Image (tube, rainbow, N blue to C red; front, side, top):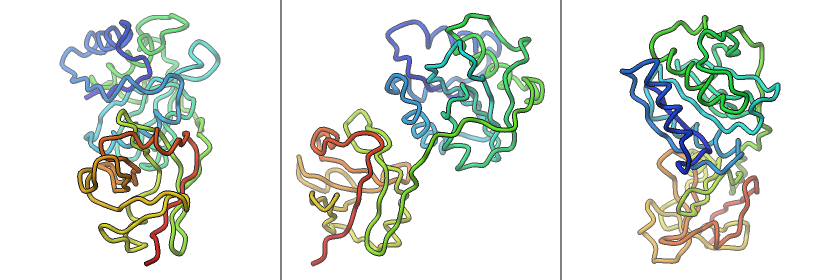
Length: 261
């Protein structure tokens, strides 16, 4: 199986021809589109979405993740094999930071064996290198043949979530299509602080949210906080856009604390 993520959108032919190359090399492979609506050039968003999506894919999945503002420059094309036997193919620009941290890295290889490339354009490595290598890997070509071993890879600077005596602090990592505010705060923080359903939660000591299971547990237009389907804390507005209401930006820190009675 190949899982495919980019910032290309579907407005042009790029996604289609990249998938055609994958299928041309391995006609029997299933190609699953994670998303092609990553914000253009937003490697950090892509890295977070990739991690969340990876939880639901089986062993030996080949992930192709392309947000590649450095295409055609001296940035490396790589494949990261993680300890859970996933393969991550794409540019060496930090896009694999969070999957590497979460799963651990077995080995990294530069995609410098041109016998597994499809073409030689300077600006479409998504088709000519990443899609082609993914096709071969999905077909069973040994990982060791795709290129030479790399000792390291680019890692994005990160702000890890923090747990205090009665509060949690995390980073706004991206906004989904509904305007929900996705954070890097893990669900286990809720258990450690012993939040209960319908608790009033203070957001940045300014806004009052309700801790609930689902969006519909509060009235339309009301703010809420809950554990999302990937196991992270999400800040939302029922049938509205939390991004518009709270005016956060990616990378901003948020503090959540249960309001005292």
